[in-house]
Image (tube, rainbow, N blue to C red; front, side):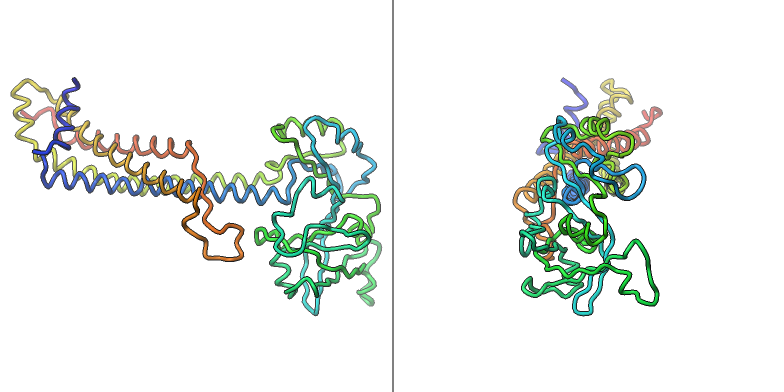
Length: 403
């Protein structure tokens, strides 16, 4: 039998030991359980938003993006698309051409990036799930269509697709005249065929059209800005990128989605660490309630300590006893907090009980994603904090010079 642990457990749980000190110890358990639960919930909520951002980023950033090493565009004939399509791990590929345009409708104007995509685009980056009006087809026969974001539709005053014709202006690359500025632009009138919903920045920035329309508008025949590639399920994007790079040659640069969004993902990691340490600070402050409960318990049990000394217990034994007492209080709070945090996280993750008060947002409820690594990190951080506080408190209150 571990005698210090047995005595500590009786001090805390035995029916005859109930007192104000036990009530304070119970309050300490609750006071540390709440920050532990909140810490786990906060990290899970951040995980949910992180996954949502990654998912949204995957809508306009392909698994692999092949761009020219120099310049903004390249001739599509320079790439062996047959060899690229046969590369192990490549499931689909699509050429795109991007350039800024001016959009105008009924006197309202906006600047956006027009992304012209070929007919294979839907195999690389499906848009059907994002459409809130119309459909994701960029062209129906010879009829050209635009896909615009909800924010851009609001900016241009588009309320219905029945009357959603937009005029596109693209700057001519050959010359620009200040006397006749309109002659310096290529102009096309195109119907809006669909409206998509995504994050605010993407909705405001990107307008999609067919690759044929973009080439005519920008006067870039047989050229593209990038080749988008979709990897097969289970394939490692880095390994596929290495194979594609060998086929494409040194004139092209291949990047994975993570490399395309490297700065964003790095900021997200920093934000998560920031949330972790801010929550940890709150947890450390809450853990000082254990100090008060443990100190009062040591004072209350001085007679018992004197009796144990008379029976042969030394200072080391008494310190172990009260350290066990502090660890019992801490462990009870940690278990309660982890159970509450895990329960709340899983309920929100599977049932979405807490709704987002915004009809236009992509999610109806706050996104939450539980990860075992977060639970282990919270438990380890609290164990170190509680263990340190308990050790310092007991050592400072039970001196070796006491009789």
